[in-house]
Amino acid sequence: MLISCKECNAQISTKAKTCPSCGADRTPIEWKVFVAGMDIFLGLFFGVLFLMALFYFMRFL
Ligand SMILES: [Zn+2]
Image 1 (cartoon, rainbow, N blue to C red):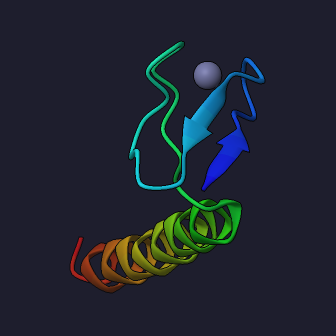
Image 2: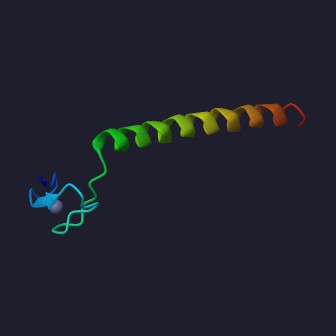
Image 3: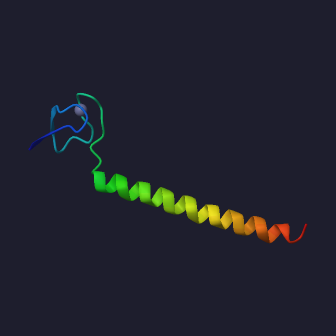
C-alpha cells in the first residue's frame, strides 16, 4: 500500500520507515504526541524532584 509523505507528498510504501524522497520518518503522529507528552511529564517530574532536593538540602545550610 502506498501513502503520501507528510513532508514532501511523495508516494511511499507504508512498510518504509523513512521517506526515500526526503528522509522524513513515518513515526505515527500519535506516537510523537505521546513522546512529547512523556518529555514534558518527565521534565516536570525531575524538575519538581530537583527543587524538592534543593529545598531539602538548603535546610542544612
Ligand atoms: Zn518525503
